[in-house]
Length: 106
Image (cartoon, rainbow, N blue to C red):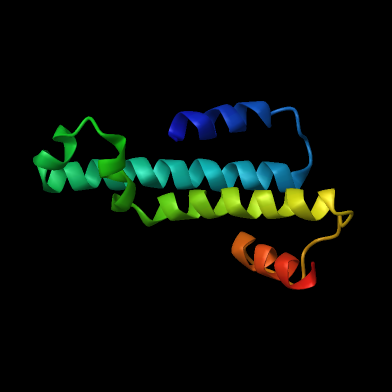
C-alpha cells in the first residue's frame, strides 16, 4: 500500500498547481504518521514488529484510514468529471456520499 502511494506521489511531481502540492503534502504527512505510529507501537510492545504480514499493521494508525478515504475521494472526483462535472463538489464530502448521490439521481 505504501509503495503504491509512493508511486502515485512520484507520478504527481510534474503537476505544479498548489492544490496538487497541498494534496501531496497531506499524503506525505499521513504516510509519515502511519510509520511513526507503527514505530511507537513496536517500542511499546516489541511483539508488534514480529509480524511479516502488512495487514497486521493496518489498524495501528488512524492516518491509514485517511489514506483509504483519499482514494475514495479521488475516485468520486473522477466519476464526477466523467459525468461532465468539473466544479468543486458541494453536495458531497466523501466518496461514499458521492456514490449515494449518483445512485439516487440515476
